[in-house]
Every structure is written in C-alpha cells, then in structure tokens.
Length: 70
Image (cartoon, rainbow, N blue to C red; front, side, top):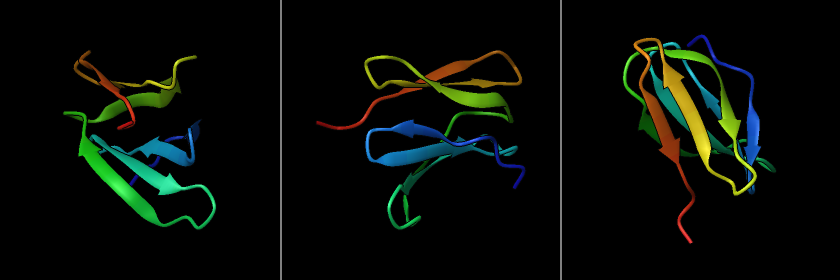
C-alpha cells in the first residue's frame, strides 16, 4: 500500500498509505484499530503535535487533522 513511516499518537502507531488512508495500529499488538481517509494520496509521513493531534497532507495540498477521542 506504499506505507509511510509510523509515528506515535498515544497508544497507537499511525501511518498513511499512497491511497490516502490513515491507519491506527495498537502499538503493543499491531492490530488495526482504525482507518480514515485523508483524501487523495498522502505526501510524506504523518506529523504529531505536542498536544497529540496527527496532521496529514495529501498530494493536492489538503491538510487533515486527527485527534483521539477522550
């Protein structure tokens, strides 16, 4: 799927793929815990801010932010 480098968001590893999907994996088991579309193909790896928000940029320039439910 052309996966990006994984980043850590809380208890999850987060990575994106060339089809524009962002994946959340359990960092202990590797189980898929979530998947969301970020639009078109993703450019570069996701970035996690100090407050735990994941930012992903698509190849058309759109930036999508994902936070964890509290």
